[in-house]
Length: 419
Image 1 (cartoon, rainbow, N blue to C red):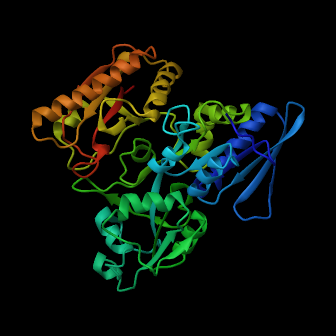
Image 2 (cartoon, helix red, strand yellow; image 1 turned 30 degrees about the vertical axis):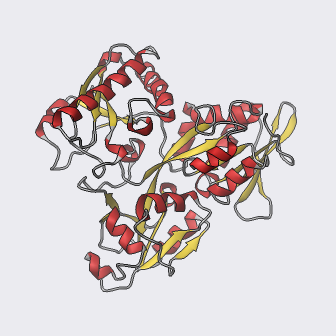
Image 3 (cartoon, helix red, strand yellow; image 1 turned 120 degrees about the vertical axis):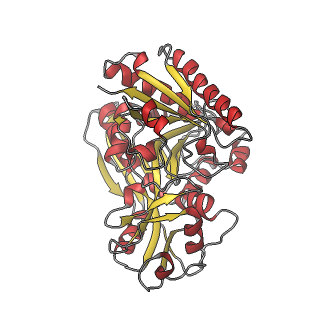
């Protein structure tokens, strides 16, 4: 059963990353398309809350966006106070379990990936440090490294800037960077807002902080590496493909498919091409594929350069649930996006090449087999959306994008013939 919001026609609660700019833009775009009238925005008197109002079906519809952190959105959804939970992290197992009687929040009808974001590691523009490993980042934010001179920078104490405990951005940073090994230094300054954090870092030559990619503003971005993989700066290709080590998905969760028409319509709009164009406009990374000629580093094998020499890469990777050959929720939607890309660009299916990759295995032959099976599973899934007989190959355990054991290494890249 769908809970109706009390005071408003639709309530979206949760992530500041999603709610600060992106959710209001998506709501505005949808209401303009759906209602055809002017959308007016106003505050509620509470910081990080916004009401959007527009005529829909000959009456004024009001949508509340309350952006106080991802965990607050789950609580509101569970209490029946929100129609949509905006989150900058996946639902936690205990949350899914708590919600199980109403809906499976991990199912495709409940979990909607609306954008891809890169966790941006920010420093002052004058800072000469340009890259850092995740391990070093953990040591910096835990206070084990306290001076920039230890990292090749000036003799200056390091000032830490971090999101607050209610933030999905904090949850992502804690999971991807601190892990079980590190604890955030108690001297770190904490923020509810990504933008305010970034602005403060850009004014502090000693500062380092993290935010969503849309909030880089005047700060300098660091390139980040994991394990023995090369350091990558977040950009359209590295983030959209989720190769960047601190890339993450931004979500909207609904309680199953039994939701009010306004909720279902907004989700459909957000996932479609117009909604994804607004995602790009907001500063996040759209899931609409584009073709890019990647810049290879010195470590790229000559055989891979030859294999892809006549191709561009699409900004989409197919990834799998639990590291297996079953496509995850985002990948299922991406099948349709690849099909739409071919239609819109007048390209035949045989212009595509799927390249599968595996994480490090006990034997090179086993890695090769796994990588080919992954590519084959995507080929079969594309056939089901009328993209037939795509060429595929496996590249084994070479060219990792993460450390040994990283799930991101198990992927299928999509390449298209150059024109």
